[in-house]
Length: 542
Image (tube, rainbow, N blue to C red; front, side):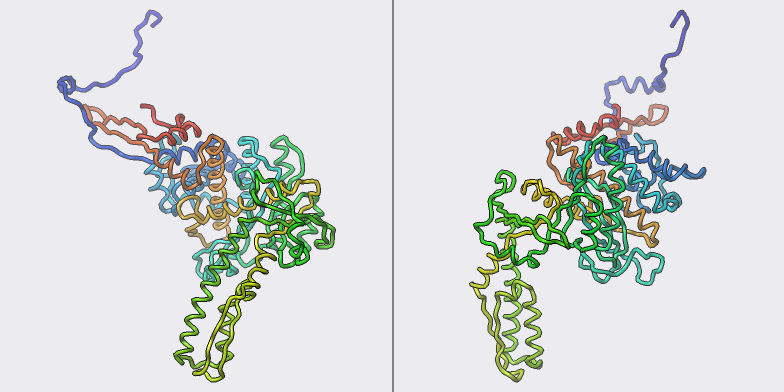
């Protein structure tokens, strides 16, 4: 080259005997193979990279310690990636990572993921750090993925923990009204604000499990209003945000805060509190955009809501009506079975309880509001051995109940110029937040549990890690949806997890054993996912 000899490349072929054996016509087979997870972890890492999660966390929290194996941002990002792909405890993350191909394209060795290193890194993250990290990541997310943030849904739930009742280091974990029906466990509350465009979390709020949701609404509203200016600036858009929430957040104080903040809102009111609207005849309702909402009818009025004249809309949905009717049938069937058992016991004279005690049991069986209205019962006799129970269903009362309540919702909004169909669509976006909570309770993908933490700081870090995983999951689902693949988060992660990487290890020919990497056989949908998430950049070079 340029008139001078130069070594360009050199490859060791082995001894003369090795070369002779190789040329003798025999096929060299792999000595052993390894199978590594690739698709799901690579797709998640691709989204983390686009969001600059590692860089943002490191900028907010600060540089890593000299003896740390990786930066704090790296540990937090990998914890979220694990929650997305294969939730496990910190003790097991190193083993999980070693079973993936991620060390090849990230340069992060499994040895630096020992659980104590996680604790050392994440215990330096404060509540203020988490809030700032979330703000910056969302500000990066909105323009990067083109999210519509003009309307958002707000909702809250709580998660059961297994923290010992005697532990006094976790003030966040408290006994309260458990939405998972585990009243025996301590709870941690979580509020989310998500986009209508894909249900992407924009704001999270962790609070003690014994605090009613309605008390946390002002805190979330204030934070949302504060962040929205920055978010719209990042997205180069302007306009008013509309927050959608359910009736559980309603209170005079919360409505006063909404009006003071001068933001749009859509919520619902308990139908039983507005009997005047329920009593309006069917002919008062008009059909609403049958293309979007088949069978839906509605009427609108103005009413005084928490001290101010406000637009209210009563809707009737045939689908909701049918669902409530089926629910009533199920409640009646359960009451019928229990009353039958009680009546048979009384007929055998096998009770020692007096009439008042038996009547109290019957009232408990029939305590459901709707069942109580249509099921009539009669308990005769005075002495325990003489008691007799009969009951019946009042069909006229049931017809009246269905006509009065079933299928009806009452919506309230300060958007006086919105078409009814847009108000209904906004309210139904509340399901996006509920869907996010259901996903966090899925034990297989983006799972909140198990939570092996017992201090407030660790609980907050864990909760944010789960929210970050939920952001990744819904961004990935939205990206696949836009490309024509309509999959749930679980189905998407499973499809990506089916894209594996196989390492073929050949016998040594005198030097180090030769290894060849290649992806496993894929389906048409998996090939589509490879293109959607540009997994070619992370795939092995064969």
